[in-house]
Length: 349
Image 1 (spheres, rainbow, N blue to C red):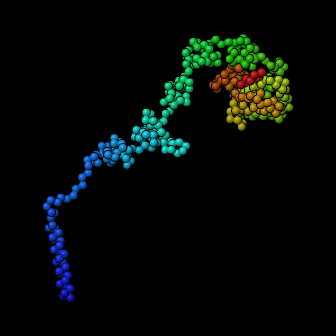
Image 2: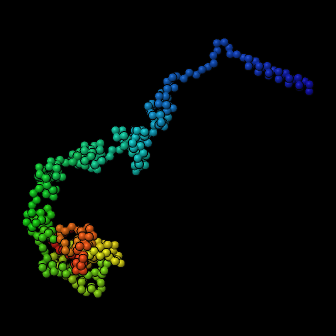
Image 3: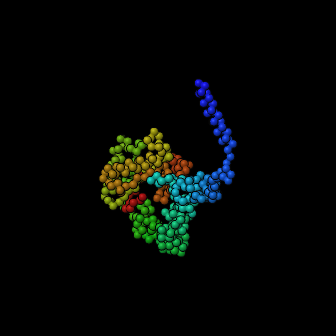
């Protein structure tokens, strides 16, 4: 046991001696600690983005921008214009799911637009603010007299005139019926405005039938004939169909009109809808009698064209007080409730 203790004491003293000698050890003369020298070029970072200039592909990036491993800022739409310079960095992509819409640097990263809507992109359009045509590179066709008719279509290049008269101010009325040729359905044959300048195709007797039919009586607020009145009105409508059958080259315009009393307990919201439905009733009746739909047109004016001022030139009234002037009496209201039928050799619509 004693021997073991002595052995342990010897080991401890040896260990302490080595430690003390190690602490007192000094480097040999002439031997310096090793230093690692980093070349200055690897320490320069001009834009302070954390990427040294030596491997920074974008050394002038603003310090506020996030950069990739190469020191370059983000370019979402891959158009070569970095997001901080790109006014359209994240516009919706295309059908293939691409992130952004590419645009050139000269347009701040945005795709070229078409300000004047003429189909030519602004970078190719010589007149980007004025709509034009292809043969003039996006500029309007020349128009010397500024009448809105291009010189190539203008028969009077130095005199202003409407397009329907090929740019000429002199508008002819060849048949002298009061309708200028451009609005005359039959410019070589005089006729009333009611039939678009074409001669009348119905006789006085047939005209009387049409006037009688225009007084057709409908159920209040509806577009149907009361059962008790059907025997009166259906035969008259049959006569109208017979006229059309006897003149297969003609057309008929059917115009529905009402007074100014709003529909009560009616499936129609207003007089215009009611008048349209009544005109359509007559049209459908004609079709049921074998008249082609292409020869017929049904329109409704509601209370805007009172009987007393009804003419081809009359514009629909808009103000309620004006309409009321023609609906003061019972007789006026009865006259206003009508379905006017006009037969002509040309379409009146």
